Image (cartoon, rainbow, N blue to C red; front, side):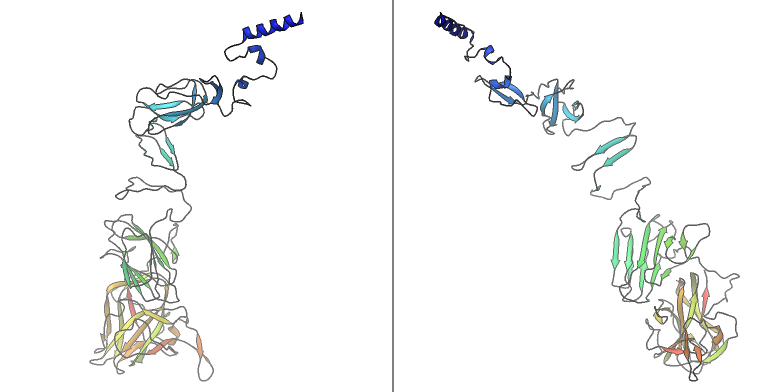
Amino acid sequence: MILGMMVLSVAVFANEADGAGLVWRAVNKAGSLISDLGDVAGGCTGGKTLHYQSNSTFICKLFKVDTKTAQNDVFITGINNQTGAITTNQFSVNLKTCSGTDKVSAIDNATGHVTCTSDSGLASINADTTSAQLISGVAGNTTVSTAAGTTTINLGSNVLMTGGSAQTISKQLTINDPRINGMDLNFTRITTGTSTTLTTTTSTVSIDLKNGNFTVNLPTATSNTGELFTIVVNSTSPNMNYLMIDPFGTEKIDGALNMNLTKNMDFVRIDSTGSGWTVINTNHGDVDSGSALVRNKPFVLAQRFSDKWITSSVNHLAFGTLAAKTASIDATPFLLSRTTTFDKIGLDVSTLLAGGTCRAGIYTSNEHGFPKNLVTGSDVGTMSTAAVAKVNNTFAVPITLTPDLYFLAVQCSSTTPVLRAIAVGGVPSVLGYTTNAAGAPVGVTGYSSTFTYAAMPNTFPKPYTPLSTTPYAVFLRPIG
């Protein structure tokens, strides 16, 4: 009986077996998984699904999509920019498809929806031209074209503009940057030579005056409206050489034919008005009332006449006289509190000498209060002492001096002529005091140095001999 039942069970089992020799009830039990049918222990992961193979086994793999006949309900994870082929790894819903020769140009990362384009080349983005366009990226090239609205380009830390010619921005450019200049512009450092001519490719120029005086020539303002230059004196060694800024031709800087920077670290920022130059900012001078701009106000004498002159004297004590010297240069301090332009330099001859001549010039001062360098153009040749009269020479170009301590110097070819001199009590007491033979303090009224009569030297000769007596009166005529 028992043997008969076993034979019957085997027969039933055999009848219910499929081609693989397995029956459903053999695996239809607690703990069984459909993945147990293949070599996929633990189930499929990473978005893969169980797929049947022709050899009657199962494996885990990604669902394949025929990219030429776009499928619905597939989540797209990548696009080949050249062919438009797409890569997928899991199901989604309502996927828009591209047909024919259309290419995928955009993907919504949240839904997997795509935007199609018929452009046969690189894809482009065509958005509503009445609203802002936003393009972001850190690599590759981005072309922006929009007929209306605002275009924002975010390319990471730097935006680089390149091309075969200069880039032109025809509208006002606003740059939100905390730096004083708003942007990085061309910087030029000059440590040699005596002059340079600025061009429109120059923005900031730093001049080292260690080797002597220097002239910065400006381009014409007429064809360079809005051109901005920053000029800085930055010397690497102590000196009191000066830098002259000379506009083109008869153009002016706020009415002056030139401007001088006389101290180390002086700077000026000037802008072209289209007909001349105006000072935007500088680090010395007065602050204009009601204006945030700092500049040197030009000084013009009230009731200016053709014979209105100024000299080193700080009061109206009567002038004395002093016999000329030979083989020496005498210099007396000249304090200037406002930017002033001068066109003439002169002397007053009290006792004549036929055939005699004298010369005069302006010197800057060094950091210790001694005469240093000749202001270029201030010595314009000899002045005759053949008559009792005021004698003078005209500067080839009017000289503009900024507030500082200068020296007015004079030398003569003979000791015979007598010149007008400043009373000791009228000399500025800026050179300190020394002690005379009796031990009493005596004010220093100037300096004298040995020099054979000739054109004024570019550097005041040493050693300096302090003067405590009446100095010569050298006159300057202010014109603005």
